[in-house]
Length: 348
Image 1 (cartoon, rainbow, N blue to C red):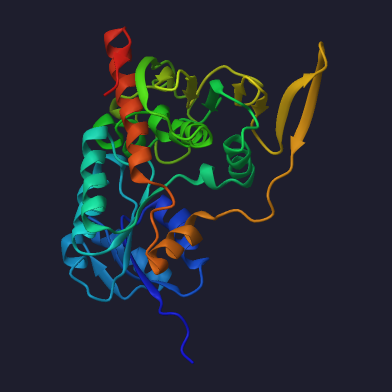
Image 2 (image 1 turned 90 degrees about the vertical axis):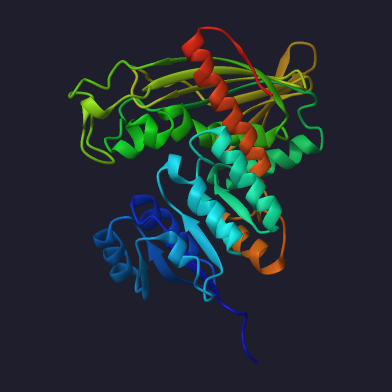
């Protein structure tokens, strides 16, 4: 008896995130094979193909989309170039796993969401934090009423020394922004996932660039240091109000003079939680006491790439609904706009 049909994956973009995350992610799932790759650099595409035993190499993703023997695409391009190949793939009948963020801005992201809706295919964004066992477990408990009405949370993605060098991170026309959109996207997505992704209504933000020109701060990660090409923030904060009445604060940095800043937390009118592994639940014990409970993670929780391929095989909705992630892009747009204006910005 023949086994399940293999899902055949093609890559658009063959850089570090493709090789370091998406290749092992796809190949960790049974009956998945990588059959094609595309990069604007033929040299990089050929190197990727040789490293991963891939037969079909392209420099034009539209040509790759013409392949009948292709079921899904991993989009691993820089942020501001997520939309075109994603939309092309969905229109060509291919499912898409696109690296985070959704896009470089909400307008491009909206086009991707529409293409997914029109096609009825899976569009999953690479936000792995919501697949963390502890986050998933807390999400289920919050749905059951553990925290009561959630009204505030703080999430952080703070590096003390971690400025990347490549233009794909530090040049706004390529990346869309700095640490807010680069690493803040993970922590903020996890926080919003926990509370059911309410509609954002208003945001205030501030951005700073304090260390981009300092060669003593750069530690050599993700490309060569190029201060002349660096035009995004290296520190950003935002505060967002939601239709539920809840407020979330986000703090992000690639570099900052920081020590231990504690953990992300979320509070409701019944209990609060500090995030991490394990998650700690705080509630009242009598009139003055504090009750602490270590939240034991569920034994089985979904995994990022396995969830994508399961949805593709079974015709299920995306495990990371793109409509949710579009809300996150609107928040980021509003935080950046607020930082420029020096005033809060309404979110529609």
